[in-house]
Image 1 (cartoon, one colour):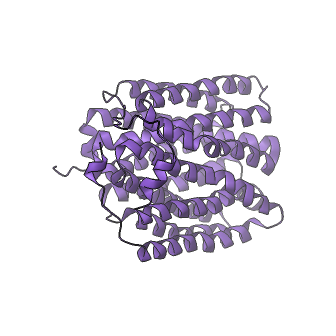
Image 2 (tube, rainbow, N blue to C red):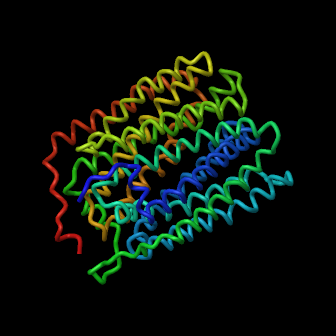
Image 3 (spheres, rainbow, N blue to C red):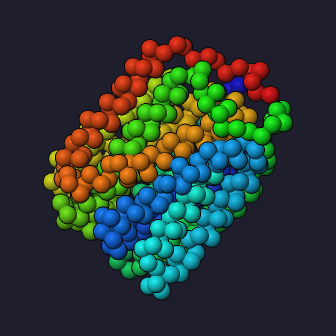
Length: 409
């Protein structure tokens, strides 16, 4: 098949519609994230942030496996539409309660839980459907393009949030995100590809088949473990530490937090743009080495005495985490047969998103007794170490078996 560039993939109608759906919902999420984090901080302080972030992380552990099973059992397009409509419906009463000043912290916690529960079904279906829209050899380009675009939109959303907070209540952002999910569902509904999976085996899909599919691919399996460990430390440090650092150390408000998030988004855009342009051969191994970028990133947070230095630290953090995530997903999309791909993506999604919960439970509480600078300094060493050890173990493992064409039945 003729090689196509990342932008040329947009000539494919179905991919273009998926691209627009993800872009619209990501722009809404940019506003909603600022509202979610800052509302939680104002209402409950650092404990409020932890409570809300835990609520939107735990569902990945509870529903991640089932989301992968559903992606291989049911129509993937319809699953994505249902998840978008559910997320939009959840946010409408949250926006109304916020605008009428009747939204309690516990209400936001409940909403965050159900939003992530719906995402646990959307994410595996979306990741498993992508190779059918762009072909396996183009998944890295597609993921890179999507990552660069959505994070560029996040820059616009976070920057706009910093200005809109001066004239509009923060709860307005929940309404914008609700509308974005409804628009996303409309775009996905226009995708011609059915999203259905052709499965020769009449038995119901089981999650153990995902682990069996990953077993002959040691770099992919080890990379998934590394993601779980690295995100546990990075998210636990970020979620509790960044708002605390900005408010208490740098003496900045919600606008400062938004600007630091812009730095993270710029790093994410750079990661997506690089991976959309340059093909990586051993994607799973490269995903582990990408965590080394956290060394300068979190070191800058540890040493930050000004907002620009914190922004630079956020840039490297976005570059490392988004790069690692894109490479790992692309490796699975290239190497795993379609009839089990949903479950494998469910496992990866569970590990990646569920690690936010383990980070909140295991790492964030340490901020009660340890200063933010010390926590960021320790994470700057530990996170790259996970990646280096994982890459060495992958190099010592047997060569991966090629995807058997006979497995795609």
